[in-house]
Image (cartoon, rainbow, N blue to C red; front, side):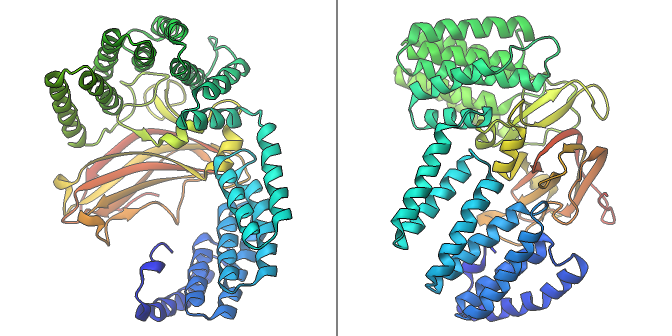
Length: 498
């Protein structure tokens, strides 16, 4: 689907013939409503549209849409994408009645599939309002925009509040970001002895957002006071060398910077960096971000020599991080903090999804990793975010030309509706994004809801690969638990599980 627009004109018919032969096979082996079958029909329909065979295109994509509509409990995202593609076809045909009907469907689908308050839903509805204006339907566009404003005004859920707070922070509306984060804190219970570690970390994260927003509004003294209180309580609860204590030092550094106490801010940054690099394994990601902040501060103060030394340290850490993957269980990692060595994309974190080391229900040992939301956000955000992607990357040179296996133990919890599933994935990147390349994401055998089980992927690393990525994707209303990660060279006849 992603490559269709890059085909040469003489290649369209060849690819169309391939799809025409493949679709009956998918229907027989996977089912008429399987995601791969529907994706293939959508691709086939797109090519038919490009070839101006609009009737055939409409029939192909219409069939895919109706099948996706009939299995909304298992394919909500497919249902939305097929509808969007049908709208594109009707635009090509300049078919206004069908465009209006499909926009009406898409508005309802966006609310159902993307969630009432998600950023993705807001962007989609704004786009459909623009489509209505382009079709000379200003009354309908005004009605849709009024509905969006009404929904925004009624946004009271933790998920909506967190989305709104981060959106304000990212657009430099720091007063609004602080107000939203402070309001959310009032709705979150104060952690007690029995509070799950992920809910405890969630509150800690929102506290940091509120303080860092406040520091940027000119309320320097108050933000410093709150940041110091957060550092004291975190250090008392978690210990001086804990990953959350490092983050609290970092927040205090930003509050001090907002009050123009640059020397004290740099001292707090150095304390945070020391903790991050003292973790086992080292928290390369946090350390690098903090070092970049320290370097920029030193440059601003005219200390170019020390800034250059920090730049060299950043590069040295990147080389060290890149040398090999971080594997095994999570026994040495800080309970209640994000795992060192793994990354969860920022927009997922901003949306309330957490990746936290836990000390209960591990596959082996005492600790494992949890990927999911916190109290009050799981359902709404799972619907609005499609999937969450936990990952790490490392140098591929030692594995070139060899067969490798990526394995991990996974436990999945989730509701019966939506698409609760998880998938391990791995990919080898070649120079200039060349393809084909080693890639697998368990697309045809995802992890279903159930107890601990070991899964693995195998593949041969390309001879010119320069980077390997491994990770875990979590879909739908699901919470995943990860343990016992391994990546190894195996014999050529080795297989994957299950």
